[in-house]
Length: 65
Image (cartoon, rainbow, N blue to C red; front, side):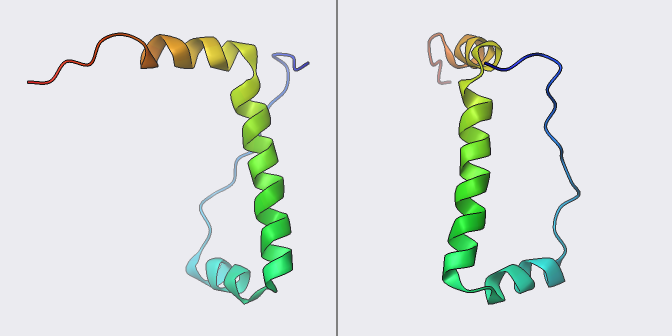
């Protein structure tokens, strides 16, 4: 279970050169990196405090004008 002391490290957006370098990696390496990032996001979305907050702002009726 996570605690409130945990933080998620954020970095500046990737430069074009960094993006191109990622695309030049072998597909297996890109998949490994993306899978690791996906696991981190699943863990973040599964935190109970985040789930409650998300349910609050996603809940309610949709009003179209």
